[in-house]
Image 1 (cartoon, one colour):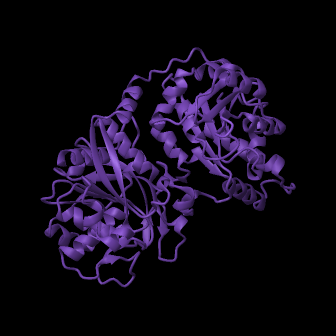
Image 2 (image 1 turned 45 degrees about the horizontal axis):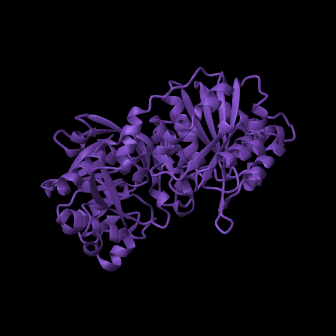
Image 3 (image 1 turned 120 degrees about the vertical axis):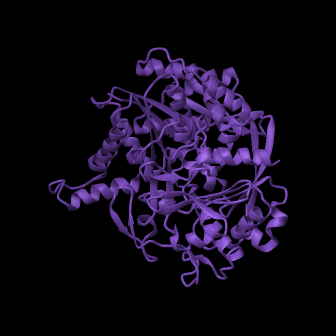
Length: 539
């Protein structure tokens, strides 16, 4: 049977529940445990796929094609594991499934209520996520006391007494504010948060105390006593130089001791030598490069969370600090690529949706191509490389993607009306199709071309597997013209153009897939690692 660790948050949001959950999972995995992860989101959206990245941050895509919360990305990056769609669910999904079952007669005419039906569905999904794992770590989104989180709190309370559950452990992440005028750390917000949990029927067995200052011993004792936990179950969580140092910080405070004791594990001794060595290279690297990161969701950097983390992973393995020079593509339209990218060692054009800022991205691609600067284009960044090449090398005036100009005379990027999805089912994609149901999502194979940068980056692999999140495809009718002019297709997936490179350019790669989704601290993505290496070599 599976044991469960539940991670809740109090006082306010953005305290780092996801990093806490991932860090505990990492330590348990390196102790030899089979660890599963689950993020529960209390919002009513069925999935994050159509939510604005400026509001919610990045949409992460799993191997099996689910659009999930960005915390699933943290789990994968920390645990070096691919999680599936069962690792994330929302209030919207829970209610949708219960209502659908009720409409089909599945409840035999019962009156459907939050208790037991909604709560029962939540418990069922948690147990499904835990199948096949020794431990499942469950992160509850939101903050204790939120009205939308109450059914989830009730579900995990009930699981304490479930005969099918071998053991439960409750971790509460909370804020310890420092009141500057008084010169004091304050425990009262944490006490109130724990009291709210107790009112619901949950007594946390560990407090993760987020603080800007170290906690004095006397303060720890006071906090432990007022929250009814042992002193060694108050874990200090200070701001870290890198999020990847958090597991090491927790380990130094023996976070696994109380967990092992409560869940009946033998002594847990994780082997973190490799991890620690990589963290040291993140914090104090020997080399430095500057990557010009061209995007359009720069108001919230978490819109590109996986991508920025993937650059950190590659930098750690190359003992290099990868500094990001954030460049708004709309600013390039106003001021030009030369002015904004002249101090960058390489250029990366990220993915995105919609017409805003597209011309600026095209200018950035032209700048990298003409100046022989290492270039990586991801998803839309790859599609726009075709548009730029068609306009400025082939002389196809007005070339564009049909996403931005339905009447373009040269539709370099187009929409496939009938497309086989990951399950082999045919889906119809038109301009009026709902965004959430018409994306190419999840992992697909890509056949690489002999002698290409792509194949070299992946260690000579003839076929690679990467994840996708897009609607539009490169139009194959222009392939001959592009290749005749020096832009070579070096990766294909079932006849679809996946990657392109340019003859004579030192390092230029456009990829339709999202390599950042498979990058982890201990195993960086090969194409991003090769890009950072090329940036180093170009200095």
